[in-house]
Amino acid sequence: MNIRQAKEYIKNSVNIYLKKDEFGEYCIPVVRQRPIFLLGAPGIGKTAIMEQVAQEMGIALVSYSMTHHTRQSALGLPFIAHKTYAGQAYDISEYTMSEIIAAIYETMEESGIREGILFLDEINCVSETLAPAMLQFLQYKVFGRHRVPEGWVIVTAGNPPEYNKSVREFDVVTMDRLKIMEVEADYRTWKEYALEHHLHSAVLNFLDLKKEYFYHMETTAKGRSYVTARGWEDLSQILYHYEEESLNVDETLVSQYIRNDRIVREFTAYYDLYRKYKKDYRIQEILEGRPTVQAIARAREAAFDERLSLVGMLLDRMLADMQEVMEQAAFLTDIRALLLAVKNTAPENAGPGQVAACLEQLEENRRGQMFAADRAGTLSKEDRRRHRKVLQFLEQARKTAAPEESWENAFGAVKERYEAAVSAMKRETERVQGELHHLFVFAREAFAEGNEMLILVTELTVSSAGAGFIAAFGSPDYQRHSQDLMLSERQSRIQGQIGELFID
Image (cartoon, rainbow, N blue to C red; front, side, top):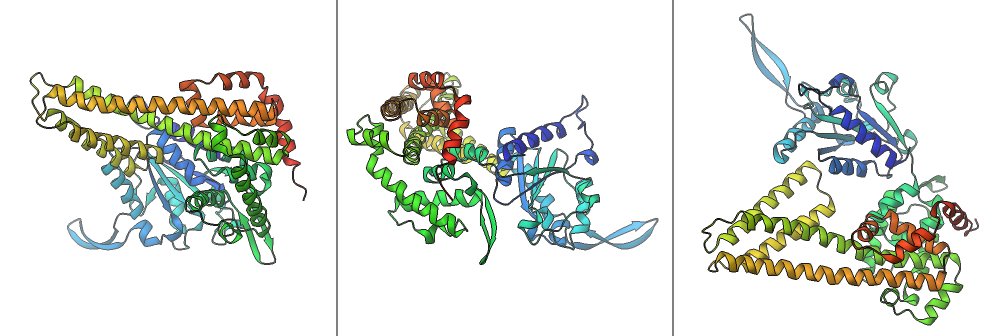
C-alpha cells in the first residue's frame, strides 16, 4: 500500500481501538489491540503521517526512536524496595518507571488530552538486551512493571533489513502480535503532500519528468547509492534559502541530499535550465497580466519539458499566494470569534481598562491552547503560525485599547484595527483572483486546451490551498476549464508523454 492508504488504515484502527461501550469501557481489550507495524523503506513519510493522524483526530502523540534505548532506559532502573510478607521483612528488586511510559503521563498532564498514539520508530533495531522485553510489550503494553495508560494506541515502524544493517528480523511469535502494513514509495501520493507543503517547483517538475528518480536504491562501485523522499524534501528547503541569499546551487550542494551521482548531475543541469526559464519568462509579469509577446510566442513553440517547467513555476507562485490568503482568512475568523466574545461578555458598567483586561485574558488562554497542542504533538506548522498571528493581533489591540478610554471607545479602536485587517485581506484576495485570471488567460494564449491546461487545472484541484481558495472566492476560469477538460480520459495520455521525454 502507499503512505496515504496506510494513513487511512491507521485512523480506522485507532478509532476502533478507542471505541467504548455503554459503560465507558474500551470495546477491544488491551491484549487484542494489536500494535500497528509500518514496514517500509526509509524516508517515505512514516513519521509524517503519524503527526497528521494525531492532528486530524485531535489526540496526543508521543514519538520515540528505539535505536538509542537500552534495557534500562526503556524498562526503568532497578532499586531495592522493602516489603513485609506474612510478618517477615524482605528486600526485593523493583524498577523505576520507564522513560517512555513517563513521557506519556507528562504529555497527558501538560496537554490535558487523555488519549493518544505512542509511536515507536525503528522498533526492529532494538538492542539485544531489550529484545526479550519487546514481546511482552507488544502483547500487553507493559514496559517493566509499568503499563501504557488506557486509551493509548501503539504504532511502530521500521525498515526492511536490506536498508538497515542494524535490523533484527522478528520471529513468528513476535510478528503474530503485530498488525503489519507494508508501505511502498509512491510518487503520485507523495506529490499531493509536496504540494501541500510547497516543495520547490524545480524538484516537483524534475520528478514529474523522471518519476523513477523519486525513490532510488542501487549498489555502485563506490558503495550504496540512494535517493529518498526525505532527501528531495530537504533539498527543496535548502533551495529556497539559497535563492533568497543569491547563493550558487551546484552539484556539491545537491549531492549532500541526493546520494546518486547520475541523478545529481541531471537535477543540477535541470535546475540551471529552470532558473533560466524563470528569468526569461518573467513570471511576475505574466501573473500581473503583462506577458511579453516574446514570452507567449516562446511558450507556444517550446518543447513539452520547457512548457511543463513554466507551468510549474507559475503554479508555485500562484499556490503560495493562495495559501497566504487562506491563512489570513483563518486568522481573521479566529479574531472575529474572540472579539465577539469580548463584546458579548461586556459587563453593564464596564469601566476604563476593561477591554485591555479582556484581551490580556484572551492572550493567556491562547498561549495555553498553543502550549497544550504543542505538548500533545498535535500542533502543525500552519496552526502554530495562526496562533502566533492571533497573539500578535491581541497584543497590538491591547495596546490600542488605552486604559483611560471608556469601554465603547476602547472596543471601537480594536474593532477598527480588525476591520482594517479585513479590508487588507479583501484587497489581497482580489489581487490573487486577478493573478489566477491572468494565469488562465496566458495558458489559453500559449497552450490553448493542451496538456499544460490539464496540468494547471489538476494541480489547482489537488492542492488544498488552490481548491480552498477557489471554493471560498470562486474562479470562472477554473470552473469553465475544469468542465471542458475531461481529466480522467486525458491524464493517462499526458503521463505517457512525460515519460517519453528522456532517453536513457
